[in-house]
Amino acid sequence: MANISLSSAMKRYSLLILLVAATYVSAKKSSDVTELQIGVKHKPISCEVQAHKGDRIKVHYRGKLTDGTVFDSSFERGDPIEFELGTGQVIKGWDQGLLGMCVGEKRKLKIPAKMGYGDEGSPPTIPGGATLIFDTELVAVNGKGTGAEETHNSEL
Image (cartoon, rainbow, N blue to C red; front, side, top):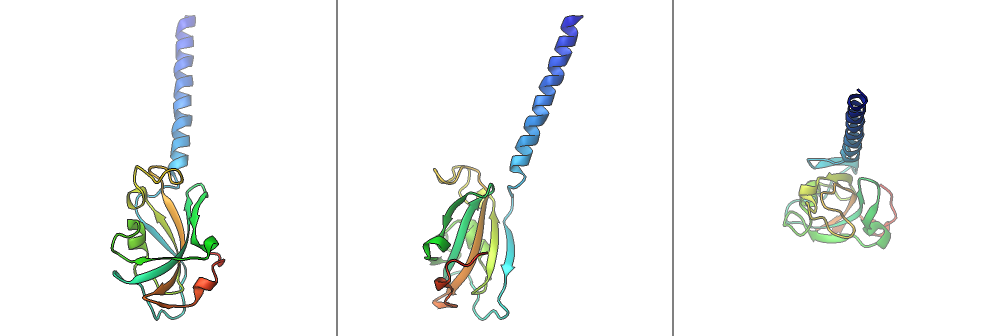
């Protein structure tokens, strides 16, 4: 009789451990996204210059993991990144998430791993399978900008 109740207690205990572990894993992953999410944080009153595929753009950014860890930031360096939009020079989440953006606009991009660095990540700063969060500000398109590159400490 003691073996049966001990066995039953062990099964319940094991089940409890599994439930706690599943809850932890689910809570840890709740901030991950499966599709690109674009949040417009600031849009200029007039949008005279907009980013299109093939445009040469300058963007300030702050890249974070879902736990809030900043892994890179052009704001702190005072040096926005410049690249040709939509041509694969940056991660897919950027190529899609910055399309149609106005000079002076600020967006928050939540990028799933499949549109970022995938299952491999970018060691040591970005783990495999990581959802990436970028605060972005479009500074210029094809050399036409707002002079925002001088205000590199602007917060999003």
